[in-house]
Image 1 (cartoon, rainbow, N blue to C red):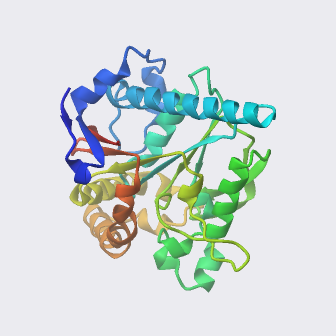
Image 2: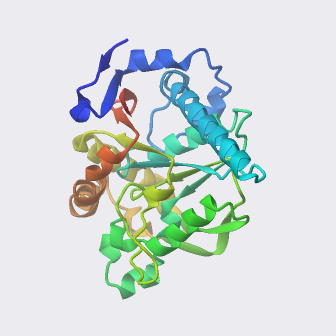
Image 3: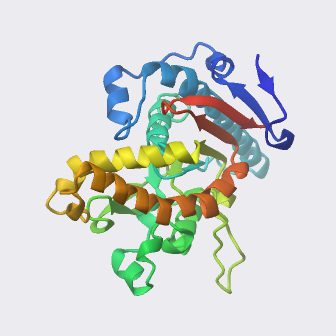
Length: 316
Protein backbone atom coordinates (compact mmCIF):
# COMPACT_ATOMS: atom_id res chain seq x y z
CA UNK A 1 0.00 0.00 0.00
CA UNK A 2 1.22 3.44 -0.97
CA UNK A 3 1.46 5.39 2.29
CA UNK A 4 3.17 8.68 2.99
CA UNK A 5 3.14 9.50 6.69
CA UNK A 6 4.98 12.78 6.27
CA UNK A 7 1.98 14.72 5.02
CA UNK A 8 0.95 17.56 7.34
CA UNK A 9 3.92 17.11 9.67
CA UNK A 10 3.19 13.46 10.33
CA UNK A 11 -0.41 13.99 11.50
CA UNK A 12 -1.95 12.26 8.47
CA UNK A 13 -1.55 9.10 6.44
CA UNK A 14 -1.72 9.97 2.76
CA UNK A 15 -3.37 7.56 0.33
CA UNK A 16 -3.20 7.80 -3.42
CA UNK A 17 -6.45 6.95 -5.13
CA UNK A 18 -5.61 3.31 -5.93
CA UNK A 19 -4.42 2.42 -2.44
CA UNK A 20 -7.44 4.07 -0.82
CA UNK A 21 -9.85 2.21 -3.11
CA UNK A 22 -8.53 -1.14 -1.82
CA UNK A 23 -9.95 -0.29 1.60
CA UNK A 24 -13.45 -0.77 0.22
CA UNK A 25 -12.97 -4.41 1.25
CA UNK A 26 -15.72 -5.75 -1.04
CA UNK A 27 -18.44 -3.49 0.36
CA UNK A 28 -21.19 -3.71 -2.28
CA UNK A 29 -22.30 -0.63 -4.20
CA UNK A 30 -26.08 -0.34 -3.94
CA UNK A 31 -26.40 2.95 -5.80
CA UNK A 32 -27.34 2.98 -9.48
CA UNK A 33 -26.31 5.31 -12.27
CA UNK A 34 -29.63 7.12 -11.85
CA UNK A 35 -28.93 7.54 -8.13
CA UNK A 36 -25.53 9.05 -8.91
CA UNK A 37 -27.04 11.46 -11.45
CA UNK A 38 -29.56 12.69 -8.86
CA UNK A 39 -26.88 13.23 -6.21
CA UNK A 40 -24.32 15.28 -8.11
CA UNK A 41 -24.34 19.06 -8.15
CA UNK A 42 -24.49 21.32 -11.15
CA UNK A 43 -21.36 21.33 -13.31
CA UNK A 44 -19.76 18.45 -11.36
CA UNK A 45 -18.31 15.17 -12.53
CA UNK A 46 -19.39 12.07 -10.63
CA UNK A 47 -19.25 8.43 -11.68
CA UNK A 48 -19.93 4.99 -10.26
CA UNK A 49 -16.16 4.42 -10.26
CA UNK A 50 -15.66 7.52 -8.12
CA UNK A 51 -18.23 6.30 -5.61
CA UNK A 52 -16.74 2.80 -5.57
CA UNK A 53 -13.12 3.91 -5.22
CA UNK A 54 -13.46 6.92 -2.90
CA UNK A 55 -16.77 7.05 -1.09
CA UNK A 56 -17.44 3.36 -0.39
CA UNK A 57 -14.16 3.00 1.55
CA UNK A 58 -15.06 6.17 3.44
CA UNK A 59 -18.52 4.83 4.28
CA UNK A 60 -16.90 1.62 5.55
CA UNK A 61 -14.52 3.61 7.76
CA UNK A 62 -17.34 5.75 9.14
CA UNK A 63 -19.48 2.68 9.77
CA UNK A 64 -16.67 1.29 11.91
CA UNK A 65 -16.33 4.57 13.79
CA UNK A 66 -20.07 4.82 14.40
CA UNK A 67 -20.19 1.22 15.61
CA UNK A 68 -17.32 1.86 18.01
CA UNK A 69 -19.07 4.94 19.40
CA UNK A 70 -22.35 3.09 19.81
CA UNK A 71 -20.59 0.23 21.58
CA UNK A 72 -18.83 2.64 23.91
CA UNK A 73 -22.18 4.28 24.76
CA UNK A 74 -23.70 0.87 25.50
CA UNK A 75 -20.82 0.00 27.85
CA UNK A 76 -21.08 3.34 29.66
CA UNK A 77 -24.85 3.10 30.06
CA UNK A 78 -24.46 -0.46 31.35
CA UNK A 79 -21.92 0.75 33.90
CA UNK A 80 -24.25 3.55 35.00
CA UNK A 81 -27.28 1.28 35.07
CA UNK A 82 -29.10 3.34 32.46
CA UNK A 83 -30.98 2.17 29.37
CA UNK A 84 -29.02 2.39 26.14
CA UNK A 85 -29.79 5.64 24.35
CA UNK A 86 -27.28 6.33 21.60
CA UNK A 87 -26.92 9.99 20.72
CA UNK A 88 -26.53 10.87 17.04
CA UNK A 89 -23.08 10.58 15.49
CA UNK A 90 -22.26 13.93 13.86
CA UNK A 91 -20.15 14.22 10.72
CA UNK A 92 -19.13 17.62 9.37
CA UNK A 93 -18.13 18.34 5.76
CA UNK A 94 -16.29 21.58 5.01
CA UNK A 95 -14.68 23.17 1.97
CA UNK A 96 -14.76 26.11 -0.39
CA UNK A 97 -17.55 27.38 -2.55
CA UNK A 98 -17.73 25.26 -5.76
CA UNK A 99 -15.54 22.41 -4.44
CA UNK A 100 -18.45 19.95 -4.38
CA UNK A 101 -18.94 19.50 -0.64
CA UNK A 102 -22.73 19.38 -1.03
CA UNK A 103 -22.41 16.48 -3.47
CA UNK A 104 -20.01 14.73 -1.08
CA UNK A 105 -22.54 15.18 1.72
CA UNK A 106 -25.40 13.74 -0.35
CA UNK A 107 -23.30 10.77 -1.44
CA UNK A 108 -22.27 9.99 2.13
CA UNK A 109 -25.86 10.26 3.30
CA UNK A 110 -27.00 7.83 0.60
CA UNK A 111 -24.24 5.33 1.40
CA UNK A 112 -24.35 5.51 5.19
CA UNK A 113 -28.11 5.01 5.44
CA UNK A 114 -27.71 1.67 3.66
CA UNK A 115 -25.73 0.22 6.58
CA UNK A 116 -28.17 -1.66 8.88
CA UNK A 117 -26.52 -0.30 12.05
CA UNK A 118 -27.56 3.30 11.30
CA UNK A 119 -30.36 3.52 8.74
CA UNK A 120 -31.54 7.01 9.70
CA UNK A 121 -29.08 9.60 8.33
CA UNK A 122 -30.06 13.26 8.10
CA UNK A 123 -28.28 16.08 6.32
CA UNK A 124 -28.38 19.79 7.12
CA UNK A 125 -26.41 22.68 5.67
CA UNK A 126 -25.15 25.67 7.60
CA UNK A 127 -26.74 27.89 4.93
CA UNK A 128 -29.89 27.61 7.03
CA UNK A 129 -28.10 29.41 9.84
CA UNK A 130 -27.16 32.44 7.75
CA UNK A 131 -28.80 35.62 8.96
CA UNK A 132 -31.83 36.61 6.84
CA UNK A 133 -31.22 39.23 4.17
CA UNK A 134 -32.92 41.92 6.23
CA UNK A 135 -30.49 41.39 9.12
CA UNK A 136 -27.46 41.21 6.82
CA UNK A 137 -28.51 44.55 5.33
CA UNK A 138 -29.13 46.00 8.78
CA UNK A 139 -25.65 44.91 9.88
CA UNK A 140 -24.23 46.23 6.58
CA UNK A 141 -22.55 42.89 5.83
CA UNK A 142 -24.48 41.74 2.78
CA UNK A 143 -21.23 41.65 0.80
CA UNK A 144 -19.74 39.46 3.56
CA UNK A 145 -22.26 36.68 3.13
CA UNK A 146 -20.52 33.38 3.81
CA UNK A 147 -17.96 35.00 6.10
CA UNK A 148 -18.10 34.01 9.79
CA UNK A 149 -19.98 37.14 10.89
CA UNK A 150 -22.88 36.38 8.50
CA UNK A 151 -24.01 33.32 10.47
CA UNK A 152 -26.22 33.08 13.54
CA UNK A 153 -23.59 31.06 15.38
CA UNK A 154 -25.53 30.94 18.64
CA UNK A 155 -28.47 29.28 16.89
CA UNK A 156 -26.16 26.83 15.10
CA UNK A 157 -24.41 25.82 18.31
CA UNK A 158 -27.71 25.41 20.16
CA UNK A 159 -28.96 23.14 17.40
CA UNK A 160 -25.81 20.98 17.56
CA UNK A 161 -26.09 20.81 21.34
CA UNK A 162 -29.75 19.77 21.15
CA UNK A 163 -28.94 17.06 18.59
CA UNK A 164 -26.24 15.61 20.82
CA UNK A 165 -28.62 15.74 23.79
CA UNK A 166 -31.02 13.53 21.84
CA UNK A 167 -33.83 16.07 21.69
CA UNK A 168 -36.62 15.14 19.25
CA UNK A 169 -38.31 17.15 16.49
CA UNK A 170 -35.73 19.90 16.08
CA UNK A 171 -36.54 22.54 13.48
CA UNK A 172 -33.82 23.84 11.16
CA UNK A 173 -34.23 26.95 8.98
CA UNK A 174 -34.12 26.32 5.24
CA UNK A 175 -32.12 28.57 2.92
CA UNK A 176 -33.16 29.23 -0.67
CA UNK A 177 -30.40 29.73 -3.23
CA UNK A 178 -33.08 31.13 -5.54
CA UNK A 179 -34.31 33.95 -3.30
CA UNK A 180 -30.89 34.24 -1.62
CA UNK A 181 -32.63 34.26 1.75
CA UNK A 182 -34.00 32.14 4.58
CA UNK A 183 -37.43 30.73 3.74
CA UNK A 184 -39.64 31.88 6.63
CA UNK A 185 -42.43 29.45 5.74
CA UNK A 186 -40.43 26.23 5.67
CA UNK A 187 -38.44 24.23 8.22
CA UNK A 188 -36.45 20.99 8.12
CA UNK A 189 -37.32 18.53 10.87
CA UNK A 190 -34.48 16.61 12.53
CA UNK A 191 -35.80 13.86 14.79
CA UNK A 192 -33.11 11.85 16.56
CA UNK A 193 -31.19 10.45 13.58
CA UNK A 194 -28.53 7.77 13.94
CA UNK A 195 -26.13 10.02 12.02
CA UNK A 196 -26.32 13.72 11.27
CA UNK A 197 -24.21 15.22 8.49
CA UNK A 198 -23.59 18.97 8.75
CA UNK A 199 -22.23 20.55 5.57
CA UNK A 200 -21.01 24.08 5.08
CA UNK A 201 -18.21 26.58 4.65
CA UNK A 202 -17.90 27.20 8.35
CA UNK A 203 -18.17 23.83 10.09
CA UNK A 204 -14.48 23.70 11.04
CA UNK A 205 -14.13 27.36 11.96
CA UNK A 206 -13.62 28.38 15.58
CA UNK A 207 -16.91 30.16 16.07
CA UNK A 208 -17.56 30.72 19.76
CA UNK A 209 -20.71 31.33 21.76
CA UNK A 210 -19.42 34.12 23.97
CA UNK A 211 -22.49 34.87 26.07
CA UNK A 212 -21.63 35.71 29.64
CA UNK A 213 -23.55 32.81 31.19
CA UNK A 214 -21.97 30.14 29.01
CA UNK A 215 -18.40 29.03 28.39
CA UNK A 216 -16.97 29.26 24.91
CA UNK A 217 -18.22 26.51 22.63
CA UNK A 218 -17.31 25.51 19.12
CA UNK A 219 -19.23 23.48 16.58
CA UNK A 220 -16.33 21.03 16.54
CA UNK A 221 -17.13 20.23 20.19
CA UNK A 222 -20.20 18.36 18.95
CA UNK A 223 -18.67 16.77 15.83
CA UNK A 224 -17.41 13.17 15.91
CA UNK A 225 -15.72 13.11 12.50
CA UNK A 226 -14.81 15.96 10.17
CA UNK A 227 -14.12 15.95 6.42
CA UNK A 228 -12.52 18.71 4.34
CA UNK A 229 -13.00 18.71 0.56
CA UNK A 230 -10.08 20.53 -1.06
CA UNK A 231 -8.70 21.65 -4.43
CA UNK A 232 -6.27 24.25 -5.73
CA UNK A 233 -7.76 27.75 -5.72
CA UNK A 234 -7.23 28.14 -9.46
CA UNK A 235 -9.48 25.11 -9.98
CA UNK A 236 -12.05 26.36 -7.50
CA UNK A 237 -12.28 29.69 -9.29
CA UNK A 238 -12.64 27.98 -12.68
CA UNK A 239 -15.39 25.70 -11.32
CA UNK A 240 -17.15 28.69 -9.76
CA UNK A 241 -17.16 30.58 -13.05
CA UNK A 242 -18.42 27.51 -14.93
CA UNK A 243 -21.18 27.02 -12.36
CA UNK A 244 -22.12 30.69 -12.60
CA UNK A 245 -22.55 30.27 -16.38
CA UNK A 246 -24.78 27.24 -15.79
CA UNK A 247 -26.91 29.18 -13.29
CA UNK A 248 -27.24 32.01 -15.81
CA UNK A 249 -29.05 29.56 -18.07
CA UNK A 250 -31.14 27.94 -15.30
CA UNK A 251 -31.71 29.25 -11.76
CA UNK A 252 -31.05 32.91 -12.60
CA UNK A 253 -33.91 32.79 -15.12
CA UNK A 254 -36.54 31.86 -12.55
CA UNK A 255 -38.98 34.71 -11.91
CA UNK A 256 -38.29 34.86 -8.16
CA UNK A 257 -34.51 34.62 -8.50
CA UNK A 258 -32.53 37.19 -6.54
CA UNK A 259 -29.94 37.08 -9.32
CA UNK A 260 -32.33 37.44 -12.27
CA UNK A 261 -30.37 40.52 -13.38
CA UNK A 262 -27.48 38.21 -14.28
CA UNK A 263 -29.56 36.10 -16.68
CA UNK A 264 -29.14 38.52 -19.58
CA UNK A 265 -25.35 38.75 -19.35
CA UNK A 266 -23.29 37.68 -22.33
CA UNK A 267 -20.68 34.93 -21.91
CA UNK A 268 -17.85 37.42 -21.53
CA UNK A 269 -19.85 39.61 -19.14
CA UNK A 270 -20.86 36.59 -17.06
CA UNK A 271 -17.28 35.34 -16.83
CA UNK A 272 -16.05 38.76 -15.79
CA UNK A 273 -18.82 39.13 -13.19
CA UNK A 274 -18.17 35.69 -11.71
CA UNK A 275 -14.42 36.34 -11.63
CA UNK A 276 -14.98 39.63 -9.80
CA UNK A 277 -17.25 37.93 -7.25
CA UNK A 278 -14.57 35.31 -6.64
CA UNK A 279 -11.81 37.88 -6.21
CA UNK A 280 -13.90 40.09 -3.93
CA UNK A 281 -15.75 37.54 -1.80
CA UNK A 282 -15.14 33.81 -2.30
CA UNK A 283 -11.37 33.93 -2.72
CA UNK A 284 -10.69 36.07 0.37
CA UNK A 285 -13.13 33.99 2.43
CA UNK A 286 -11.35 30.83 1.32
CA UNK A 287 -7.89 32.13 2.20
CA UNK A 288 -8.83 33.89 5.44
CA UNK A 289 -11.43 31.60 7.00
CA UNK A 290 -11.87 28.26 5.23
CA UNK A 291 -8.48 26.97 4.11
CA UNK A 292 -6.79 27.55 7.52
CA UNK A 293 -9.26 25.06 9.06
CA UNK A 294 -8.20 22.18 6.79
CA UNK A 295 -5.63 20.89 9.28
CA UNK A 296 -8.40 20.35 11.84
CA UNK A 297 -10.16 17.78 9.70
CA UNK A 298 -10.04 14.06 10.40
CA UNK A 299 -9.99 13.37 6.68
CA UNK A 300 -9.11 15.45 3.60
CA UNK A 301 -10.35 14.69 0.09
CA UNK A 302 -8.06 16.34 -2.48
CA UNK A 303 -9.60 16.91 -5.91
CA UNK A 304 -7.85 17.26 -9.25
CA UNK A 305 -8.80 19.25 -12.32
CA UNK A 306 -11.38 16.68 -13.44
CA UNK A 307 -13.37 17.18 -10.19
CA UNK A 308 -12.44 13.65 -9.11
CA UNK A 309 -10.62 12.89 -5.84
CA UNK A 310 -6.91 12.26 -6.47
CA UNK A 311 -5.78 11.56 -2.90
CA UNK A 312 -7.09 11.05 0.62
CA UNK A 313 -5.40 12.13 3.85
CA UNK A 314 -6.56 10.42 7.05
CA UNK A 315 -5.58 11.72 10.46
CA UNK A 316 -3.72 9.11 12.48
